[in-house]
Length: 266
Length: 93
Image 1: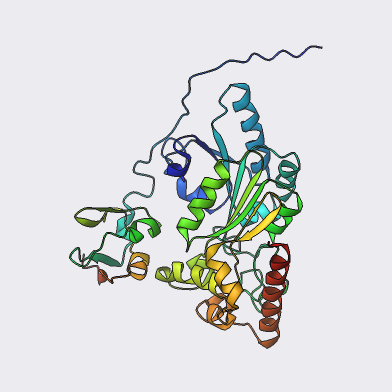
Image 2: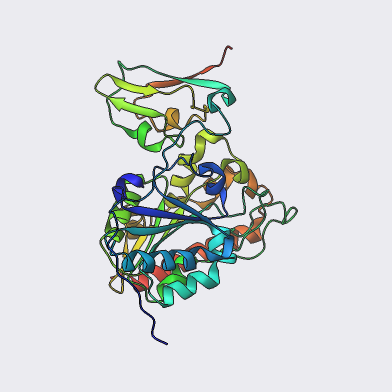
């Protein structure tokens, strides 16, 4: 990311797994200026920073929020929605590992149906995943995209596209967590790719009011060549308690999502 | 009340802190298995460098090099290598 922004980015990190990884100044590991902020305030702090940079005449600098799914879909939702409504000139990247991982794998609203967490220990989560990207599209912001760590080039391109646009930009990055999803570390990229190939995660871009399905997902949707969801579920321990009903629910969720995107795509 | 705000164009530099040895020390000691690169099979496709979550692999003309001081041995590079040029071997120390 620091290479994409070419030394012109400022990172705002609310409480999430990343704040543990990068550490505090002067020993942060990102090669970018970092502001650590409380959970709910990330988007608000970023919009303020952006305004301050404009006052100082530093117009070419970019303020980027790097937040987890808990800090975005649950706790940070209010300030995120406020910043989007005001069309604050920031990039908001939500990396989605589908639970509160570093505090001990608690359920978040972004956790998919049927997934085990320490707060949904027996049946798994009974509600479907909250689709934050769709909420952001409803705010009518200039740019919304979904990305996956299995397709880094796709993510890099989307980041580059978003850097050229002014206004509120939102990218949701799907990133599996080996500890919380209960699979071996070495399978991380394979699980992320499987999510795209089974249609549980669809890559698209929303720009100028039009949704465009990105290349990895477009072929799968056109030919209807999605792999069965069972393959995605089988390699993750968190879906061990999924029964037939939940599986049917997951299929319905997937098909509805594809249908929705197809209607909006050109 | 009139609010006056001075527009000052300050120095075009942002404070950047660069990575150095953190509180966790050399995280390579967490590793149970060590990835070994066979540079004769390596085609310099840069996939391992891109996918490495620890950012410890650098690829140049001679092949892929791994910084074992910080490699935690997750094995993602082994899975993404299209030529199977990386193998995991048990750590002996």
